[in-house]
Amino acid sequence: MQSKLVKVVAGIIAIAIMPFLVHAQQKKYEIVTDGVIVYPDKALAGNVQVIKVQVISGKIIRVMASADSDFSDSKSLITVYAKTAEINWTASETNDDVVLKTQSLIAIINKQTGAVSFKDINGKPILKEQQMNGRSLMPVVSDGEGFYKIKQTFETTPDDALYGLGQHQDGIMNYRNQQVYFFQNNTEVAVPFLISSKNYGILWDNYSLSTVGDIRPFELLSSLKLFSANGEQGWLTASYFNDKSDTTKASFTKAESSINYPYLGDTKLFLPADFKIDKGFIRWQGSFASTFNGIHKFRFTYAGYFKVWIDGKLLVDRWRQPWNPGSEVVNMPLEKDKKYPIKIEWIPDGGESYATAKWLSPISDESIIIVRLEMISIPG
Image (cartoon, rainbow, N blue to C red):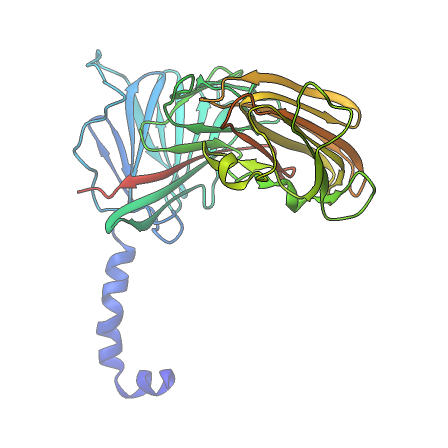
């Protein structure tokens, strides 16, 4: 069909090709007073139409990306850029990139993907965006309104450590390959600024709910291979004691495969009716196995008294007021298919309380830092 059209209506085909030729010759970038603007291939740039790399100072570069043909003129509530003295910078072009250079930094922007790499003035790599699919702005709808779900991926070196990000309750100092959720709550303070042991920083200039680091959702314990105290596969043995001062004999036992009471009121809805939550305590016992080798992350959320033993080692021993849960992350190396004994004890310490036990499998590429923004309103 296509070859017949070429023979019969060659003139029409020539005219039809012209818009594509014009598009191919359109500018890929332009130099403006405070930086450069790059127009990447939208299909290769995660739905991004335009990227601006702005020089704030010799040591600060601001990167903006838009799924529209222009940028929103709304002012940031996070940052204020004061006027500075004249900044010396240059911009040049290679076959694949636009290179912006200050007296301290080099920013290299790929003309096809829009990915930005940063080097010091001597050419030593500092940080780079993942070159393919490192940034995406995907339209979504919520409550009838249009938004974007945004994901931004950076790559760094294996020796990098990451600090900052505010005040959080997981007991973690170095957030590399960990997970931080940006929201404001009593004892939880989100500060979207990350600082590296390599002496660079990343400011996430946005105030939507965001997840930083390993952005995968934690899985319930039931997704592991579980074994009861007697070795039956599929569950742990849950022992309920209606008198926390007497732990010699359980009031009753049950087979349970998950510990998931994340909200106040869940205990009233889902704990056994025969359990006296205001006076008792619960013990889960058995073992588990994973189908992966490597570092596993276990995240425990709790209110009241909470203890966890894995492979005979006491790893969590915490107390928290029932009205506001705490959390603890345990990073543990595991061998594929090996059984590990586990024991969890919980004294709810009140008529209502919180308790969850979840986990994450090892990640495949530990050189990647991921910052994901859940939603941002559509420009304009």
